[in-house]
Structures are given as structure tokens and as C-alpha cells.
Amino acid sequence: MLIHKVHGAARTLAGGMVIAAASAGAAPANTPAAAADDVPMADYLGLLAQIAPAAEDGAKAYLLAFQRRCGRHMSTPDLRRAMSDGDGDPVLMAMIRASHLRDTGALAQLGSRVACERRASQ
Image (tube, rainbow, N blue to C red; front, top):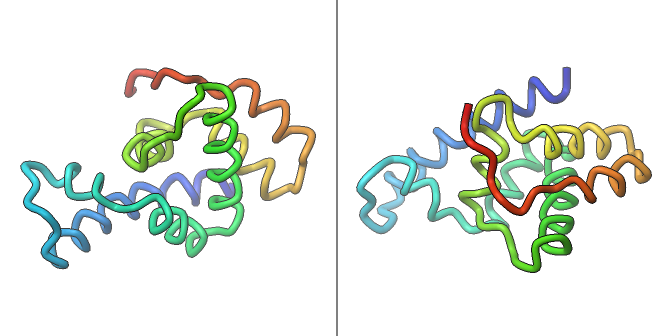
């Protein structure tokens, strides 16, 4: 149930970021998605925290695991897509659930499954 709420809210968040960026006079963008891509990671995580603290915690764990496994930082647009494309990245969704349950063992295990390459949208 939590994952469905977070996933739906992530889609709404992505749309709201487009509107906020456009109304704030953000740098011109060719597409609405490009405007949403301009949101700093800290702001995106803060918005996730407003949706559900577990969403922020799970996303932070996902970002840390990505950095450790892939040797680079994940961009905000990539995290946004992992959250909202299709049903969301299954590993990210599971990390959000594990964060909600405070299951550190599951978080550690899931961290080893974070992919360095983005999966195709469904």
C-alpha cells in the first residue's frame, strides 16, 4: 500500500515540478520533462520527505548504493525516472518499503542489486 501511494505521489511530484519550474521562470526548456530535470537533488529529496519520510530514506539509501556500486552520483532526472517510470525501479520501491519497515538487513541486501544502467521504460 505504501509503495502504491509513493509511486502515485512521485508521478504527481514530477508533474508538479514541471509547473513549479515553469512558473518560477526556470531556464527555458524545450519540454516539460526538461524543466523538471532542473530540480536540485536536495529539493527532490525534500519533496519526497513531504510525501513520506520512508520515500526520502529509501531514495537516499538507493542513491548511496548507486554511488558505491557504480562509482558515480545519480542525477536527479535519473532518480525521478527510477521513481516514476512504469511501476518504478523494483529495487528502489523495495528500498522504500524496507526503509518504512526499518529493515536494515533488507536495505543492505537490496543495495547490492542496484543497477548502474537504467532499465528501459515500460
